[in-house]
Length: 208
Ligand SMILES: [Zn+2]
Image (cartoon, rainbow, N blue to C red; front, side, top):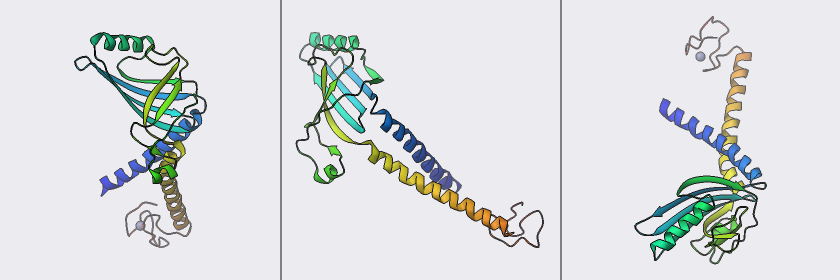
């Protein structure tokens, strides 16, 4: 019972923190682009796999990109070019100036589209104009990756905000109730009439 209570409290506290963090990133997304990138490179299969979470202009993108090279030369060259642009295998978090993205949706899922969410494998791409020089295998100073999913940040924010508001409401209501009981000389915890008692509540033992 105590564990359940702790779990519920942790859940609401997490929602509360997440809603604050998301709101901050929402505002921030109009000034800088946050890019969390994980790049893995497999020397044996000559394959690179890239996962990206991008926050830009009020939207959150999840992207995946993989490349398989015919020859070890090409693979090494691509990695060296990535390294030159400051991108090495592993996880990194970078932020850049906001970019104007273009996202083309070929086969949208209707009910998700109505929510402004686009989840569609490999038919979308995001076009990124980077502040820093792009690796030579990419076009000009632009960079294109496949978008797996993108959605407005405010929807995610709302998802965390609603439980937070509910929790705040319950908390304030509990506080007001305990205050009201105290003012009318009743136990804060069990509402027992304390007018004839001293020190502790005879019903539940709560000191007052
Ligand atoms: Zn009591």
